[in-house]
Length: 275
Image (cartoon, rainbow, N blue to C red):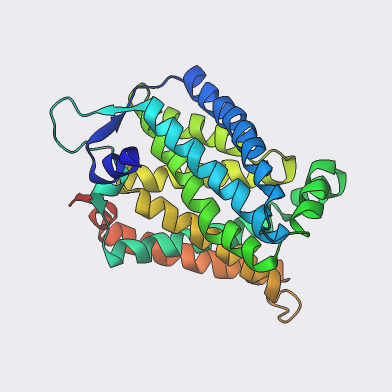
């Protein structure tokens, strides 16, 4: 766990990474995940509840893979100072969190409407998504919520913004680095219904990361996006507003307008600052 401590205290920094290398990172991630999940699945022979095991195996596997990737793609700082790109060495203000909250909620509400026709069509055609739903339906709902709203966002942000985007920024302009990492983030989701949303969301997360230099910020945004989507889905049966596209667009536009006003007034509040 030494690599995690080094990552948290900023004593290591990401290595430069081109687009081909970033693709290889994602391929390596999947390969290592398959291997580690196979090894961990051997513990199924132990007297562990099946639903708990189905939750722990992918979580532990992902953590192990992230640690391996950090060891491969990070190096000690040459000047023995905290790296400007190491994520957890930067703090963000409550005002910044409010800005991120507004931006994320507006994105979720507007894209929920914009992508809904595409999502509905592709969902009806996607065998992969039906398979995913069948698998997740067998998981304890509390474990599933924890995975979707907390653990997943944390691990995905370490991989895509903490490792991949950081490395790409050493080689490319912020625009190209964000676009490349967002494409990989989209591919990572593995099914067309989610890929459109993931591409747009990846670009938003890249923007937030560039402005804040903080993995706390993008992780917070990712958690809010996933949690709000889950809440909206649960509320559909209770409130007509949730199923009304016009209402969602109006709410999303108002939220975005508030964000724009605040950002124009104090844009520097989005900037991260070193601890």
